[in-house]
Image 1 (cartoon, rainbow, N blue to C red):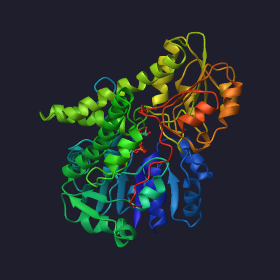
Image 2: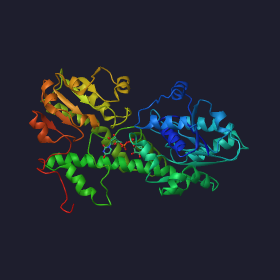
Image 3: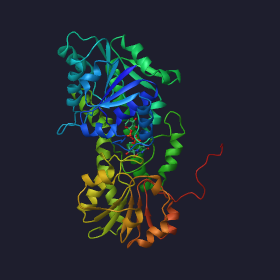
Length: 447
Ligand code: UDX
């Protein structure tokens, strides 16, 4: 099949490269000439494990090309995906659909023969209807169907998530789109990834409902973590204990500094707005958004407490800046709020991240960046671990403590054992571990 991917951002590039790997002929399009030039020269504008190799392999095989010419590409295509950005609109939190609608207009003008236009960007309920209206208005002769096909991949595990999805969701209003979409995903379909066909509005809502649920699940365990600290319980054991119930499930129950990233913050907010407008407010999600927002800054209070109530004039080392490991993405990263709150309290910040420092330096003021965790910690009153990069999981705690002026270690991802940290001379704080650690790790008797 000939497939055009409109928008070569995160989702567009990963989807394009993976679909090319399935044997389809893919043209990735972007308006950004620099990005396309970089891709043509073998560069990849984002950091995602395995993506560079996947792109190179498919470019070499002649199945994957890059261009800025959307109109020229569309005329040859069987399927045109729309994977452009849908940022939160300034002011009201609604998803900004300008890029989706602009792309629709441009695509409409060059359609040639029956084409399925597929929204892959996360878009509010009803966007497919509007895309269809725009295309019909721009090109009344066009033969086309508009489908919705939300993407559920996670950054850092994007290729694996795309190629082994829990499910593929496709929303259609025109039966002609069904066999076309089955063909697009044939390798997955044959591999027995369930393919769920729904109405278009339903499919659009599934994406928001899924992300909001996951955000709520994280927020729930974060609140339980707070409670654990107050009553002397251990949130990791609570998570294990509730997660073994299949109805709850063990994933997304890691307490931490609050969720961030390019999806959860934006999508929860957009769902709240859509629901409000529809007269069916989603109060659980409204509350989730509010709790998560205040949690990020509240993490700074843990740091201040460990520094005897004040960080004024002191250096605090922040290790891990990206919203999660294995990405260079800083969008809505908890580190942004935590660092701001610490700076507001008078701290000097020195930071280290394996991949995120370039992006971070554009978003933070008055932060010094260090080449490694130990340099970051030199003379610091406290070290805060914000992102659980593998490279930060096995630090030499004695060495770290040795270069510091103070003794605070605030582990917001619970990656160290309290007794190890204390043995290295730290005053240690983590998340939701109000109970003394077990002598043995938690294992069920039945195992
Ligand atoms: C998410 C969804 O998982 C994915 O299906 C969707 O397509 C896009 O949004 P992503 O933003 O890449 O993916 O990251 P994810 O791994 O879901 O983590 C999101 C945030 O939640 C991170 O800040 C992470 O640290 C946090 N998180 C996740 C927790 O704090 N605890 C958990 O148990 C899981």
